[in-house]
Structure formats: C-alpha cells, structure tokens
Length: 175
Image 1 (cartoon, one colour):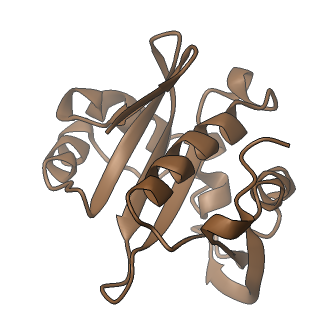
Image 2 (cartoon, rainbow, N blue to C red; image 1 turned 180 degrees about the horizontal axis):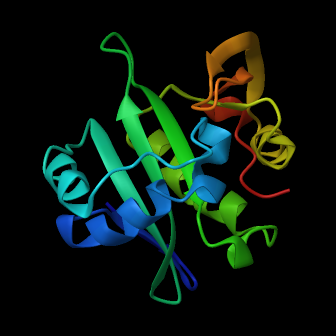
C-alpha cells in the first residue's frame, strides 16, 4: 500500500523499518495506551522477521510526514463472511500529535479500505484515551461496547476498552 496526501504518506512497513518500530514499541510513553507502559521489549530482528509475514490480509504500515517516519498504522481482515477490517494507529512522534494529522491518516486508510470493498471497519481503544475517542467519533465511528476491566496492563492495572465500528454510510472524512 502506498497512499499520499500533501506531505503525508502511508506505506507498507518493511524489514528496514524494524529498528524504528522496535524503538517505538519499546518506549513506554508510546505504548502506555496499549497496556505496555514499560514497552514490549522486542528487538529489531524480531520485528523484521514479523514484517516478512505481513500480507494483504494483515499489514503494518509506516506513517511519514515530509519523508520522515512519525508513526504506524495496521489493518487486518477479521471476517471471512464479509470484508470487515480492524485498524489501529499510533502517532509515535509526540511533536506531531494534536495537529489533526492522525485524522488525516485515518481518513486516507479508511477511504482506501472502503474502496477495496470493506463493509465495516472496527477498532478499540483504551477508555482513558479521550483524544483518540474524539477523533474516531468525529469520523463517524459508533461505540459498540465498553469492556470494563478488559485487560491488565503490564503493571497489573485493570484497563477498560471501548469498541467502535464504522460503515461506509457513516464515514465523515472531513468535518
């Protein structure tokens, strides 16, 4: 996949991206909302091997701004009966957050997945991630459930997850 809008690019993550992905994934500040406030403790070699297994049904993506990696996205096909994709996004460079670029990246990916025939796009987020929840809801995502005490983060703290779904008729790319 290669998508671009002005200075923003979404592209397939490749083995040469493994060092930056490993650095982000090992950074507790980046990974705290995913339940890993101490990072995940992976190596670039492990990440590179996992990227070799990506396919059109499951893909990790690099987000670039002006040619510089600033974050990551992913998607995976979740339902054989109909094209439902689960997505995730993480702007890892905190200097690039709170500027509207996450919404732009999401709009690019969601538009592409709907053009590929997706009937629904789903995601979940930590209930405490109010900034992300606002963005998802502004794009048309609807809360489909709240899972209290859905998981424990790596420090043992119970976390609540919020599930969202979006169909093409509710997608609001710009508002």
